[in-house]
Image 1 (cartoon, helix red, strand yellow):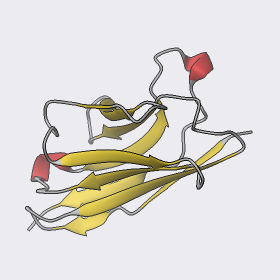
Image 2: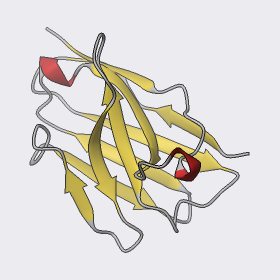
Image 3: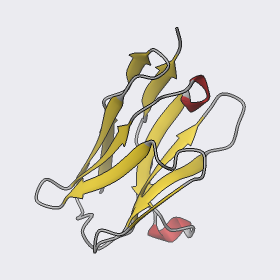
Length: 118
């Protein structure tokens, strides 16, 4: 059974930075398009960034130029470097595969809370 563990969230002032990590056990990320998602209170979960097995990446318009997704196949870990954080980035952040089909998704982890506030 695959387990995803997200970490690295916290409270940060506007303009600050955080680096999130997503460690996986039970399956390898290297063969999957992996993604970071976020869910703000009262809103649906949204896709933030995607990384492909060959290192390609894509971002939601709202984070483009501020966030960077990367992966370490040896550690089976996906990262999200978040810079120039804004209050609207406040959400619980999750990682999973980037596929829409639930059969191609891993069980969701607990997520990590990011709060951007002065």
